[in-house]
Length: 278
Image 1 (cartoon, rainbow, N blue to C red):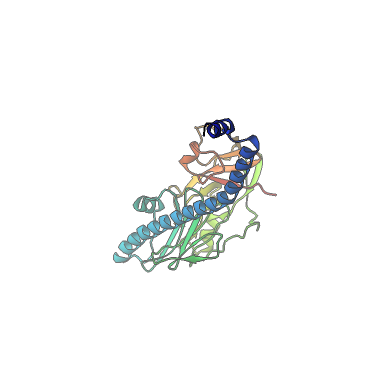
Image 2: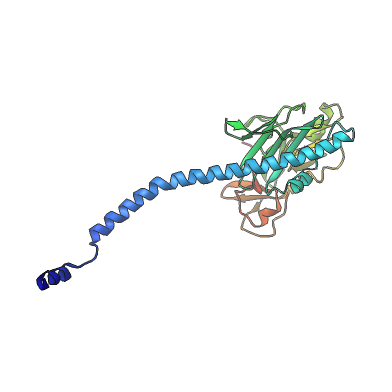
C-alpha cells in the first residue's frame, strides 16, 4: 500500500507543453468556427433594430399626416426634425411622403448606417431583396450621393455613375452636383418639387440637402447646409468641425452632415463621402 502511494506521488505532474499546444489549437479552431456565426447574429440584431426604428418613424409620420389630412390639407410638408423627435429614433429620417393622409414612403438611416425603406406597407433594408413588414405609412427618399425619389415626385433620379454635368469646386477639387434646385422647380411648373437628399446648386451657391424635402421656393435653411467651397480641410480629429465643410482623409473626401461628426471620425453615418469628378 505504501509503495503504491509512493508511486502515485512520484507520477504526479502537470500538462506537458505539447498537451497545452494541442488544447490552444483546438480552442483557436472552435473560435474560428463560432466568431463568424456570432458576427452574423450581431448584424441581424442591428438590422432588426433599424427596422423597428423605421417603424417608429413611420408611425410618427402617420400621426402628422392624419392630423393634416383632417384639416383638409391633402399635401403634407413634413418637418423631418419633428418626425425624428416624435418617434425618438437615434438615426436620420431622410424623407417622408404622404398621399391623401396616408404615408406611402419613408427612408430611414440608422446610426450604424443601415438604410431602411418603407414603401406601401412593406419594409426593406436597402441592398437586400427580401422585404416584409406591416402597415405604417410614409414616402420620400434620398440618400446622399445616390439620391432616390419617392413615388409621385415627378423627378427622375440620377443613376450611380451617370453624369449630371453640374460641377462645383471646393478649393482646387472638382465635384459633381446631383442637380440644380432652381431648374428642378422651373421644370416642375413652379408649383413645388420633391428634392431628395444630396448636393445641389441653387442661386449660385452649393447646398447639401440633408433630409429630402418638398420645395416650392424660398429659404432652404432647415433642410440644407450651405457648403463652404473655399477649401478642403485635412481631417486631423479636430472637435471644431463645422457642418457643410469638406474634409480629406486617406485620399477620400467627406462632408460633415451631422453634429456627431465632431466626435466621430469618418467614415461614419454622420459623414457623407463625396467623390471628385473623374
